[in-house]
Length: 579
Image (tube, rainbow, N blue to C red):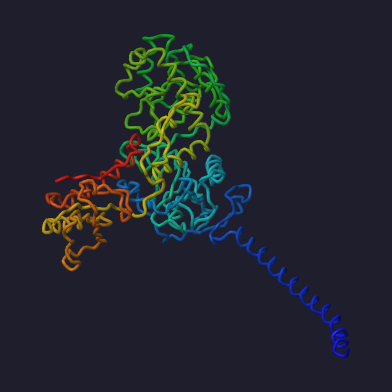
């Protein structure tokens, strides 16, 4: 009874104290877990990069509120644009890295106001409305990233659209001060009005190192094919004037010329054509009886009769676009908007987006020396073809010319297609209006949709037992500067490869793969050791090729890979040399 009474007196008092301790313990544990989850969530969604910035928009940051950067006189100046630059020499594609959406990431530098030591700005206009629209469109697109560490392409917030407003030296110094400039590598500049009097260079005169240039007046002498992007000269009338689409077909005039700053020799030739063909050709000029201003810019005259511009363009089947002081003319955009077929007379002019657009479907290009034959040439085009060209011209404007947004995003898409060629748009996607249905099947080849893991090329040497000849081939190939790795495919199952100490000493990795069967096709097997996109397949007795020839072959491969769009979905072997 004593023992039982002792137990019963302590037991009921002990149990509540244990429950209280457990309750406190569980409450504490729950609180710790909850705080941990909250902290994890904050770190998960909080910006990680110390260099990341707020979204690029003038609504959040006024130009006047941007930090002032003073340029010392001794600030470095970039070198002039390197005319030898190509995507494989001046662009680091490996910055773009793995991207499951096959889309480059573009970073826009924060707004800054650059002035010289006396406080004079580098530009007389600051940030133009057009450049603001361009940057805002990019910042709203899927290309944009505010994380500089993820960026593949960098766009300065320095407005170089119009060279006339720039101080060349100071603008170059401002570019060189950008924190990620690195001699312009992976930087993109937009310029529509290059050069200046008296020579009007066809590319931006601002020294820019290796930066890509989206330019509005390239000639064949200044355009770096496959590197630069030729863009249109934006017409402000595109935003101010609404021209409803007009159905293709015959128009009141056959040929119309509306440009006001035409060279006197071209003007004289057009007047002669007018005399020969009468009312079929309408030759307009600036209205001398109107005061200068925005209103006069939208008027054209012929013998005192006033016409609304660009509305009058819709009354002609063909519209002349002649070169002026600059090759690129805003009149081209106005003509396309009107659904008038442009007749382009500007020798050596690189047409906008010609890397992807088929201009034969929307325009007629005539050498300047054949201006006198223009009427005869145009009369030889069938009516049905003219209607198709009118329709295509209007669609080109809607898709690629109609706004700074369209111009900017088209430029980025072209660069994107170069970096991810296997996911690039097809010819039909670039050139066929949406109403035209095309069926396409992707290539079934097992091709990567991302940049290769290593630059250069891999040499795959097929051998059996000609060791002396094999070593000579290895020694010669190892001299090629672009060689990344050398892979020897040992096709002899009855004999082991030479000992490691006997192989030639070379500066790149050398790997020997032993096959299970003696087959010539072993050279084409996708070995895991191959990390490059370019592959040189060669036999062990091909000793006549020099290292210079092999380097040239690799550079040719890169050029083909960049420019031959019809073959972008096929595996291109650099070389396959059989014994």
